Image (cartoon, rainbow, N blue to C red):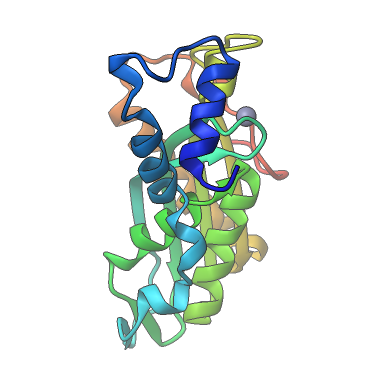
Length: 207
Ligand code: ZN
């Protein structure tokens, strides 16, 4: 087997399907295209994505970009996990074009991932690119491998966070960020009372 198309045909046979039936005839071609798209992040770097969009700016206030949608594949099952990312940083003379933050997140998301590593990679990339005073990253995601199989825990989401610089050392900075994110989650899920109770955090901080 050499290509994703061949692999897909074998997969269809293996699960008891007939790759020749009408609905499946073009599935290997579509699968190949979809997998290439969903893993396109391997061919990019954060530096390339950001390019010239780093600007000198005399700003030392916290910049928060919240509710950034992302879609990724878990490396254990090759099933999707998806949710929202919230990123904040305190600049040290350099800021980045706002549209670049979602692009950085999606670049890392379009690789096989575990949520914990995805969170850390986003925080580290922004921290390194901007040499920021501090960076915070929170990811809240639902995992298809949990929802569709095994325990079938349909409503629970997983929350991970990575803090760098002043977000790690300054309690006030961290809680300002956490507070903004929690408020946003409440606004978006007014009926979901157990939201915060379901959250599990990646570090010592609990929302
Ligand atoms: Zn999984």
